[in-house]
Length: 164
Image 1: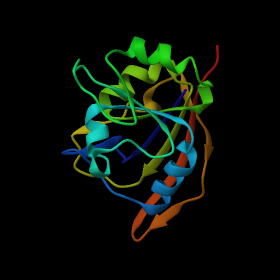
Image 2: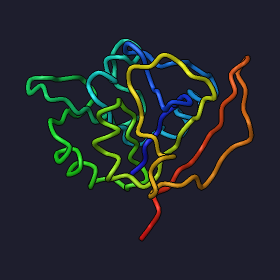
Image 3: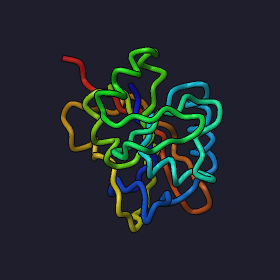
Image 4: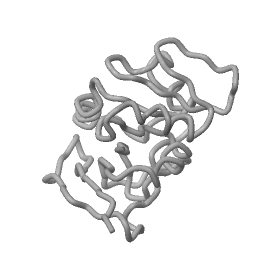
């Protein structure tokens, strides 16, 4: 499975329910990478999307502890184990964990690839992605040339879990 996120220099991913910054080419990359794939997200991430609706053109799996939570055009699960059973019906490389913080942390052990947009700024953040640079079993296997959006410098990085 894949993780996909945009992080700042401190591995921050959001503040007060919003992304730290919106970079059009990052959003385009996200759309292209996850199109016609399976996306796994928490309830708060779903509710932070435009109009709080599932992402079109994808199979949306929502993880929530609320047993009565329902949403149209998405499948709702109440445990990591339930989600893991469901994603067995799909090719592992077609499954993307898209947030938020607790969902990333819960699914990190089950993923082998992380697509990270590394933004070379420090923002005020209240939610964070696990710092893969400090984890011995993750390494960068691909990186882009420097990208810029106005005065923001960023890179597209691919991390892969080292195989034993």
